Image (tube, rainbow, N blue to C red; front, side, top):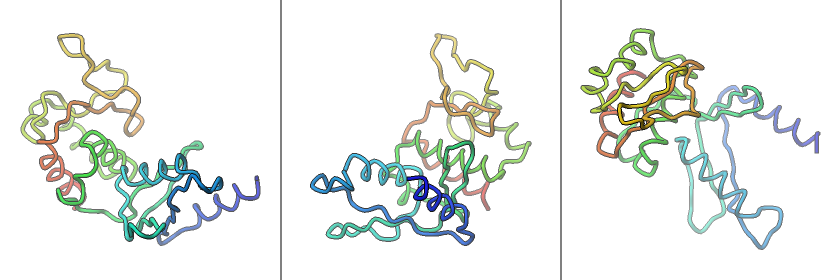
Length: 187
């Protein structure tokens, strides 16, 4: 078992130009590829925005391209290797909250947010104008993020850049506002 783990570790850390992940379709008739494991992995990779290069319904091939894997404390983070501009057609399948989380994680991991932009994202007025949010997008991780009614308005478990919590109050109507902002940041 340890040899297999080391083989995957070497593969994941040596992919300099990107690589392809092959995820077989789950099959409950084959105990070596039970659906509960493979379909969950496929769903996770799809949700975090990895581009699918082939997904034939009749085939068991499920493939992603242009990804970069980083390892930090036993947690593997998979993100697109290249800066990807988004439009509503290629992001609608992901719920807005998951989409925002995955893109913020990408921006922080790649250090694409300037201190000035982070400061803007902590400003309620800027976030209202930019995203139509009722709260600042970012707060310091030590802040509670509770509104005047006592409700938490920030994701508590997700800490971005090891410093910030992000607003969890997203609605599908705000998707295009976020995409417009995101595309400006990565250009």
